[in-house]
Amino acid sequence: MKAFRFRLESLLNLRTLHRERRLKEYAHAINERQREEELFGVLSARLTKIEIDIAERRAQGISGHDQDIFLASIDHAKAALDRQREVIRTALSEEEHKKASYIEADIAEKTLLRLKERRNEEHLREQESKEEAALEDVIGARYGITLPTEL
Image 1: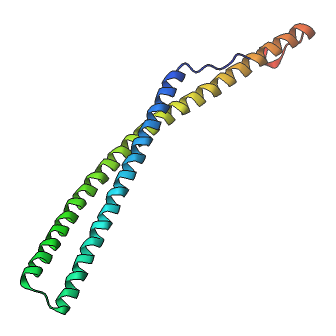
Image 2 (image 1 turned 60 degrees about the vertical axis):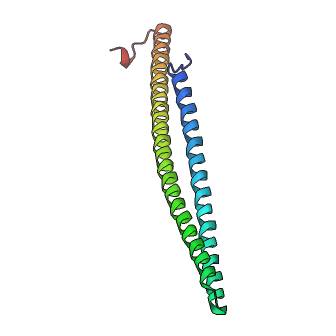
Image 3 (image 1 turned 45 degrees about the vertical axis):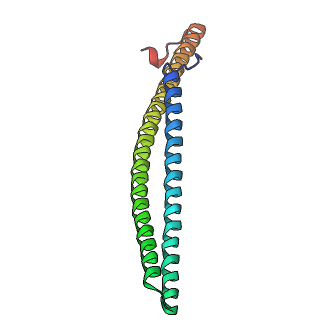
């Protein structure tokens, strides 16, 4: 039986490498977004701590100057949270873009793999029919029998 040779094997290898590269980029984007969300959690906890400190100081009595400082720190923490929300939004958008790119590369590779499988199946069917025809020729020549496929 003749061996199967897929003529687009090098293209398949390139598409596999491309898919793996896109998967790596997608994983990196996921990690980046998760880091940004963790930082958001830290900033949110810091804002909560500042608010608790202010509440404790108010219970004890706080001067106007100290209250202005605390209010400024609350404004600063809220601004940092807003900036971090925007960074997370950007990271999420980048993650979605990388995911779409990965899915596109994955589909391209799978399409080529399916083509390779179909061509291999066609090759096997063709080789089997050739072997059957050769076997029938040998049997017919040896015994002088006309087979139903030869009619």
